[in-house]
Structure formats: structure tokens, C-alpha cells
Image 1 (cartoon, rainbow, N blue to C red):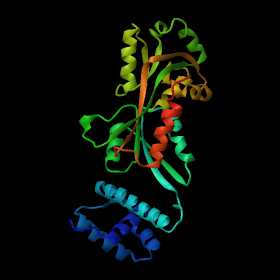
Image 2 (spheres, rainbow, N blue to C red):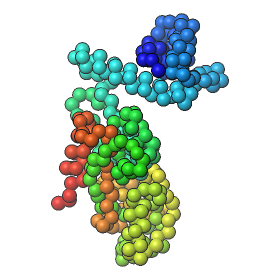
Image 3 (cartoon, helix red, strand yellow):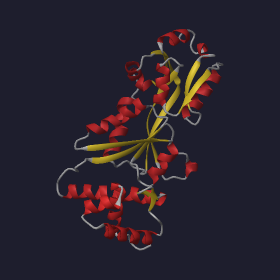
Length: 302
């Protein structure tokens, strides 16, 4: 395929951004016929349709969505470069795109990412939550700068990515006061038959908890499983069952939810990773995240 015509790509991007050829023609001060002709040339050059009909409107095809994601990044970086070389800070700040695996607790993700917003100069943080495999696919094509996960990259995925461990934490068990009172005494034997709220079976924590229950000879009643641990905490706050969270954010849980601590367990460790497309950390935001997490959030308790 010959080199892409950037003018054609910008016209395509404008149509996708504004939702119609008519609106894009107004913004670009061109006739709709001119834009339609340029779009046809781009589709011929790429060899696939970029738009399809959706009622009276245009809708991106699957190929169009891929092209748009790249075009959006190209023109964002172009605008940022123009600001930098002219001595101006980027109008919307440097964008830092982070994928957060759904099993990562929201409070912990916030504590990990918060130092980025204190960096000098404008910084726009974009967070995207999805299953880890989806996030790694986006990382591999540079749609994300970083992925936060509770497990390292599986080599079987054949994705070029590098694991940077942020730290590890024991876990704490929580429940509403009435439920906690029934299960705090004689812990962990008290968990036998207790209603438990668990992460889904695909998570590292689920497997660690299963092994731990087996070692202690207890069999809780699994009331529900969740991919979204914020939702799990909401169920816990409603009194549906006992839930766990990293001890590193224990106080945040006590402050935010109407629950109390049942017990802390140090022989189950949750490990958290920053996964990047580069072996050596260069992005200043990534360096800030890793250093702050290791020295503050996951620092050993005194």
C-alpha cells in the first residue's frame, strides 16, 4: 500500500469525529462533494470500506474504527507537538492513557494513579477499564501507555509487554457490623459456611483464597462473584456477605463504606503490576507511579 495521504486521513477523521459529511464540511469549509470524493480515494487506497449506513447517519465499520483510533492519536500528537515546539504547554495537557484491569480495586487504582496528577505541567489522565486481555491488546498497538493488573503478562498471549511490580499487600476481611460480629471470633474457622463475596474465578485472588480456605479446612458459602470489585463492596455494604480488599487500602474502606474489619491475613498476598510496552520505564508518569507505589502505598508497615 502506498503512503497514506494525510489530507485524506484528516477528512476521514473529521467526518468520524463530527458524525456526518455535512457537519465536517462546515468545520473544514469544504463542499460535501469534495469530502465524499476524498473519502472514496482513501477507501480505495486502504482497500476497505470505512463507513457504513446506520439509518440516515454514517457509522464506522470495524476497519473504520481501527483507522479512526490511529488517526485520532496521530492528530492529537500533532497538535501536542505544535504546542511544544512553539514553547506553549499542550492545550489539553499531556495525555496519559491507563488501562485498569476490572479486578483491580478502584480505591487502590486511585491511590496508584493520584501522584500523576501532582506532576508539574498539565497532565490529562484517561482511564479505561476492561478485562486484562483486552487491555493488553490495546497496549500492544500503543492505544494505552500503561496497564494496571493483579497478575503479570501470561507469556502464552504472545504480546510484547513488560511487567513492573508495584508491590504486594496482605488482605483484610470486612463486613457490616452485625455480620462481622458473628464471624470475628474464632477466625478463620468462623468463615465455615459464612456468606462470601468473591472476585471471579479468573482472578489471582480467587485462586489464592480457595487455597487458603482449603489449608484452614473451611468452606464458606459463595454468595456472589464479581469482576468489578467496587460492585462487590457495594454488595458488602448492603450486608450480603463478607468481602476482602488489600490491607494497603484498609483505612480507605473503613472511611468510605459502612463496614468494619474482621481480620487481617498476611499469608495471602495480592501483587499488583504496571505493565508497559517498553522494558525500561521512560515515561515520567510511569516512573512516578512505580516509585510512589513502592515507597508509599506498598511500603512495609512500621
